[in-house]
Amino acid sequence: MQPVIIYVDDEANNLTVFDAICPTSWSVHCFDSPLKALAQMKELDPWVIVADQRMPGLKGVEFLQLARELAPLAIRIIVTGYSDEDLVIKSVTKAQVFDYIRKPWEPEALESSLLKAIEYYQVNRQKEEILADLAHKHRELERQRLDLENTRLELELAKRRESEMRRELECWVPPFVLWALQNPQLKFPIRRDLVGITFDIIGSSRIHSVAIDGKPLRAAVIQRFSESILRHGGFRESHSGDSAYAHFGLMDGTRGYGEAAIAAAREFRVALRSLTKVYDVELECGIALHAAREAVVDVHTVHLKTPTGVVTQKSFDTTSTEIDLLHRIEKLVHKLPGSNIIMTEHFVELLTRRPDDLIMLGTRHFQGHDRPVRLFLVKSDRVDRQTLEHFVATEFPSTELLPLPQRNPVAAPHREPTLKVGQRRGTTYRLHPAWTGAQPIPLPPPGEGDEEPIFPRKA
Image 1: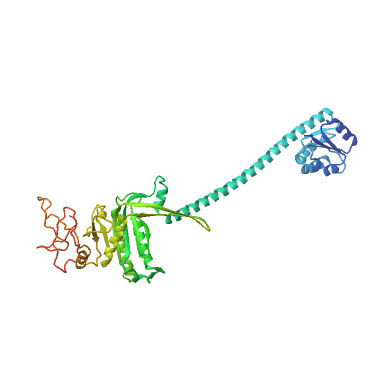
Image 2: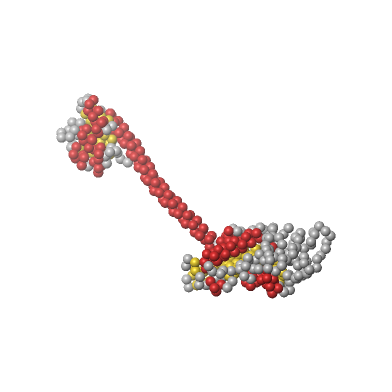
């Protein structure tokens, strides 16, 4: 790039000599008037400005001071015909003069001073370009930082929304589905042992018109059932207007869930009693418990093309004859007053401790089952002895003859004559479930002890 030099002097001879001294590779512009030079200052964009101090109208220092505002990067040199320290100090302070030259100048000295000024300008120009480039990069980096910050905030917002959406979806999606997604090795259908529980409102037509806070009473019953199930670790799979079905152990086996299921059933029964008292409405349910072995768990997929696009819907359910049995045995207790809990022997076998108020009803054949099913009952306090005996006689007419427990388990084995439920023989005994170590107790005379358990507590 060609250096641009401006020289201002009111003496024409000095202008001619200055132009002759400068190399032809430089672009030299000489002016006999400071005002003319100022007029072209921005257009020329000089590297070096040289000005004589003694000029009419505008002194050299004043001109350089004005030139500094128009071309701040240009290197300024003052030319003076005499030695004046105050002038030098003044020029450096006001116009930030790089150098000064005395008249008459020596060509070598003038050229040397100009070369130093050109070199200094190039260094300054390079520094300014570097600083400008750094400033540009800084602005670009700042812009990118702001973009990244905005992106981070958008990602955080999206993550928060996704988390909220996931939490909401987890409320809708069964835990088993999430568990299955985390275990892709599962190939459906699969078989699982389950602890099933179901209920059905008895005589639900009586409460169809009853509402709680604008919602049907039946919805409140479903809500209480769901809360009891979830609180004890189960999952409500389905419900209709008057009934619901839930299960325990779908993901981690049935161990320990027998107690959980019966606790949920008792809690639900207490909730029913509370609704009955608060809303002064007769509310009774049949509740059934069963250990359904080898239940089929399957995922169903429906994939259809519709006018609005492709629709895919997935669902899962648990099915088996054992689960069908659960619903069948629940219907039995609709003939008893109050909310009664009926359960199968398979379920009772899961319990580490059998309930003190457990009553063995007997065995009964159900369609689809090749063997009779032994059933037990946790009765409502509205069921008296006479009602229960009538229920057993009616619903279990073919009850197998069951041996009474041994009177003395330590003595030599001896079997008592077998009795049917409610049968009297000499001193009459209440029938006891067939677990060992318990002692039979006499039946009290009719009318006494109806509120006591029908069968003795486990020893």
